[in-house]
Amino acid sequence: MTRKTLYLDGRTPVRVTRVGPALEVHHHDQSPAWFPLPRLSAIVCRGPVGWQGDALQACIEHGLVVAFLDLDDRCIGIASGRPTARLDLGSRLELASVRPGWEERYQTWLHAQQQRRARYTCQALGWPDERDLRRLRQRLHDALQARFGAQTAATTQRLTSLLQTDIAADLATAGLAPEQLVGLGPVGHLADDLLSLLQWPLRGRLLAAADAMALPTLHAAAEFYHQHLRPALMATCRRTIASLWSLDL
Image (tube, rainbow, N blue to C red; front, side, top):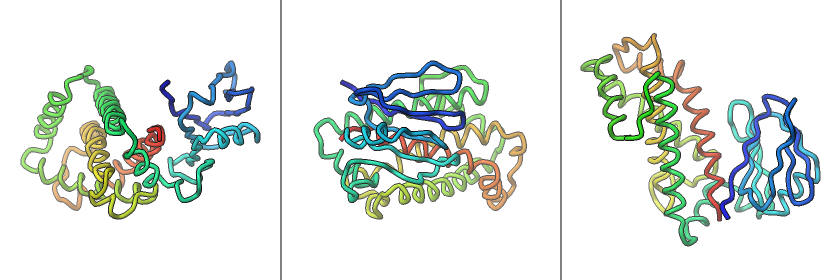
């Protein structure tokens, strides 16, 4: 049985109660939704979500991780029945990586994330959906080349370097150890994989921004990144990192 992560968005009123072996999620002006606990792998709450006490206790008893994010997608707390030493993402992924079938589960997750980010990029640019990712990468490269000309390579390299630093910082906050961030251990490629995923919104947002017609210097590119690209990219990064809790132990 495949278990899934439940995402709860508290930007509109949400209340979670327990009904027997399931959670009942009440959204404002909607019929309650029912989620059997054995079918959940983790729960990610964004913003103020109202929890009934025994509903949260049931999650802990079932060994579910409940991650609480603020409205900026920063992790502000985690509830879990697991020992405290295993609450950070780095430890969890290390444990998951020694289980049979880990690489297949991880590659399935990564492929789904690649397809999702590519699809959102096409939607943001008003392009038809393109499932051939290699062809879409080439089209993005050609579009960037047409806009920035000779400075394309230097500009994208500068933006990618800034993004890489921010990804490493977010992974460290999530609990990855220094050796994992520099490529050691079975999950040491995670930082590179996240960078690959976030190249889609980085390039898409750069192309979609009307005020990015000219970035004459690397300093200008850095300023544009921090003012216009970084907030949305980091929100996407944190949501992606949070979804890693769905990879079962």
